[in-house]
Length: 245
Ligand code: ZN
Image 1 (cartoon, rainbow, N blue to C red):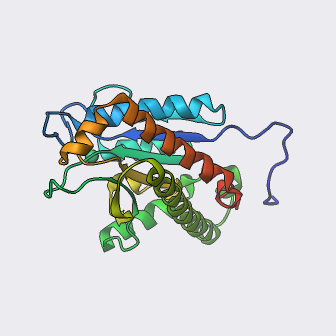
Image 2 (image 1 turned 60 degrees about the vertical axis):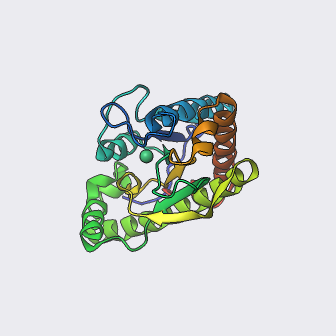
């Protein structure tokens, strides 16, 4: 059968943004000087950001958790993939050994993953049933591998664009870590087909960051900055159609 974009009279569905409040349940995350739990801060900002994004009318928003429950990292990625998320944003406020360090920072998946990780990614991405689209299912494996490689590349580009937008918007209103766009091998960023970032909104190990993140007005500023970054990401048309290979 011919491979090409399907024609439809329906407007495209609003993109799904999956928010991932870090930790939860038996895992409190970092604990601040005044006893603030990272898991509570992460959930509070995620709920605020969900309200902001939904109020714009442009997005659908789901959260990997909406209460104080423990969810394994892999399940968070699976959750986003099962729902066909357009973006995945993990939200944290961890601790550093240096209590003087403060500010927000944004993480994308490290380009130099370990060999085991790279092998795992390749295995997942080369599998034809990673693509629910029937256009892909009918294709020979070699073509599917090429498409998977294109999707992976577009995902990487999308993640970097979103991270850049987040740093730019957070920087307007919040103290930032030096070199705030960073890379690491976070498990929750390993979806091959969903641009994914992890935001450290500040550090529980820093008394000023902790005090700020306890305040609703500060959390609202963080959420507003992140909403502006999501708007900027989708306003740039070069990566929103990344699945239309
Ligand atoms: Zn965390």
